[in-house]
Image 1 (tube, rainbow over the protein chains, first blue to last red):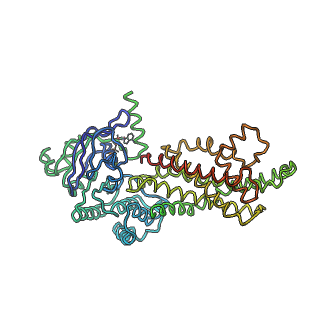
Image 2: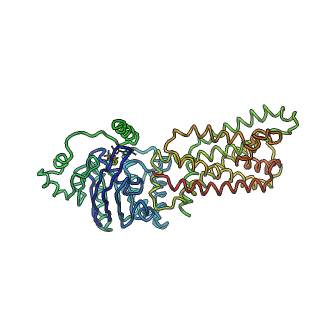
Image 3: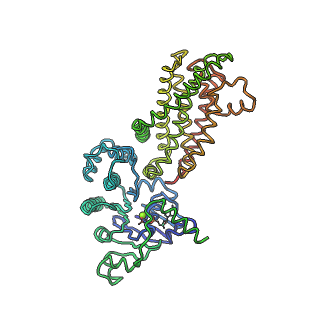
Length: 263
Length: 248
Ligand SMILES: Nc1ncnc2c1ncn2[C@@H]1O[C@H](COP(=O)(O)OP(=O)(O)OP(=O)(O)O)[C@@H](O)[C@H]1O
Ligand SMILES: [Mg+2]
């Protein structure tokens, strides 16, 4: 369903994604696990037509996201790591916008929106402007929006970041059900090891833009000789703490500095 | 069609919800009408120009449309900053539809703004020559509005952040506005200035509005509407191209 060959992304002199190759099978749930700044979001952006790669090949549902943008876009849905809702619209209006943009039939729009807003417990607050929502509520809205249409491939960039454990479980159950019932391929990134272990068929561990291991959670444990995935992960990526680069401003500065060092 | 409609509606809702912005944006045109209308009025009349308020009001309407429309095009930069642009750009929808729906919404908002300024002007003392020509005035308003929404959208497609914003206002919008015959008639201008004014599409919008509202026109409706329509068509092409190339 997804094939990636020797994918590279450079920002100036800095290589964010460094020659990675992997594939995701039809109907598989794949976790992209890695510390901050590993290159997870950058990879997702290249897969979803948001960023052009510096080099390498991508195939998505048989299409090239670089040259067949429209066809590729028809194949996937995405929940971004950072906000993609309009703050000055209500939760309901944001959902409706998404429903229309993704061509959901008029007769199904209202039912589906009610179902999903109910699912993330925002139905009662549907008529409030999103700018008045808490961080967790915004996150839930992002997820509800992403699940509104049922694409062949669903990308989730740290979908449950900042949500409480109950909500996280709840959402994963839903995604796994979609995956089982519709054979939807799921590609998600996460820092939570339990999440990767619980939800994913296979895990790709990425660090400093390079893939350090691919395999089922069980395989990774055997490979590293650790008996839980957390220890396996630490043994693969080392113990150093990474600079948090979640906001784009931080990223720019970080990237700027990197450029500066090398010049 | 539904896509164009919902993006159009989004612009209108956002406009309607920002009451502070609406009121704030009416202050400037009102100030122009009062300060210039009454300030220059006597001098203008003495110089044989007639009623200055009548001359000025169509220009002030065009001005408020110019600003509202250009800024609504530039709103793409905010959408980028707040993340909503990604939502539109990765959707399986043609960019042309997105651009068109948004711009139509922005243009509608600008026309509403123009109509509100027009209504205010009636209270300040502006008199319409022929009410039957109001539809012509509305068409002129729409063309100005659409033209500058497209213009703003095109510029915004080239910009990554808000830093260049002030620069654009100072070096593009202000000159367009001051050199459009809003404040002064074309007759008796130095030749060089006249050419500049004639190269400015806003001049034709102001002229059409002035023709429709008070019966004063230097170029004539045919010329006005032809120029406006041609510029709109060119901008539709250029802006679609620029918008199709932006990355989230
Ligand atoms: N537009 C950009 N310009 C310059 N550098 C960038 C840009 N986007 C990302 N980077 C850099 O690329 C590296 C990888 O970033 P990326 O966002 O892919 O990490 P991530 O694995 O998603 O991290 P996190 O877990 O914090 O979300 C970081 O060092 C980041 O600073
Ligand atoms: Mg990330």
